[in-house]
Image (tube, rainbow, N blue to C red; front, side, top):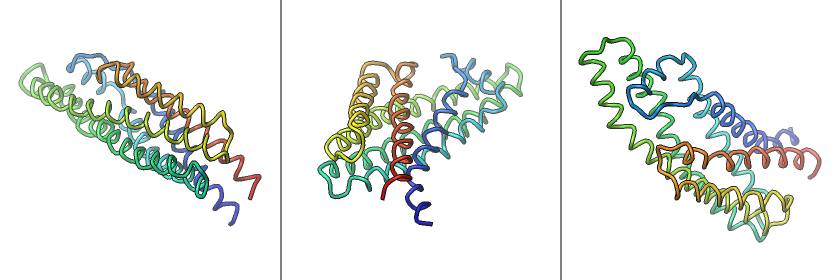
Length: 219
């Protein structure tokens, strides 16, 4: 039981981040045009499963990040780690918006579009999709920016706290900084902006693995 308690947070971080990675790999590339996007979404029977994988992974990863804070209580890195958790919570709250939109409204509109002829129903589906998706994309861009800040803060906390490998702290700072740069330099409807999530999530995978090893062998 004691060992299980030690492993809960590392396992949540590792599994949550890996679910996000798997969902990202399985997510199809979408064209820019709204009608073409709806047609592409309708063709993928796993569309909702992929997005539910994202949605189930997010709270697990966030729970695991709380474990990173716990590791730094009483150290010089505690303040930065706590700030990282606050900003990460904000980031995941924003990220949920676009994922939930695409899993719910996006899928429903795609089914309506694909199941109708080229008449009014299809036209309305494209109109609604084109009107609502920009809002979700703005939330996505803000989420990438916030997740970059959170990752850099966690990296700073690891460097200051000296309870986890220094390379992990440096990787967090660099991953977060690159994520921030991508969201600042590229529009929210570009793949470069979506790439802002890649390094922070991979950093979570690495951190979960390190915490799992440390928790299983120490204390």
